[in-house]
Length: 166
Image 1 (cartoon, rainbow, N blue to C red):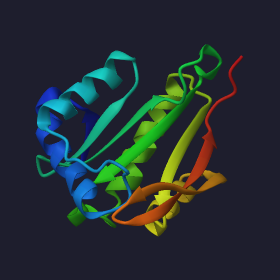
Image 2 (cartoon, helix red, strand yellow):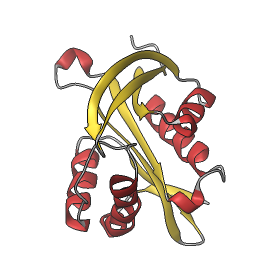
Image 3 (cartoon, rainbow, N blue to C red):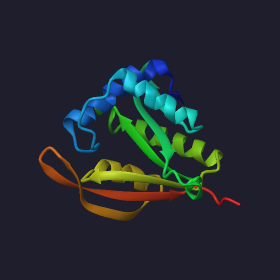
Image 4 (spheres, helix red, strand yellow):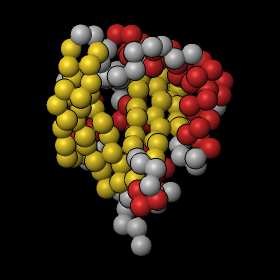
């Protein structure tokens, strides 16, 4: 496995991974598929904000991605980010998610971010297990905050402190 910064040429593979989850699951609240161009713009937006967007490759194929975005726009939130990770469905349970997420956390720590927040649409035992394995702790849950596939969905929030900012 190789973990590296995403490039614009990765947008097609990333969109294909994400679109599976849009169409087939409630782990994302997006309901319309994302085009390759939309995904390329999202990657560029994240990276232009000096935040990481990483991909994991296995045998030359992108099998997952992880990135961080600013938690909120106000200046006082500048040391907090929200993380996202997705793997191709056929790659789940192979350790790629753990390696990819650990690399993302290492990048964020090196950039002196203090707190990472992760929102998880519930239920999602695999995502909860991944986050808690990496040291995240549950801090909140909003009931019936999303509606997809004719059902109300809760979202839980996990956090992980990375550094002490001085």
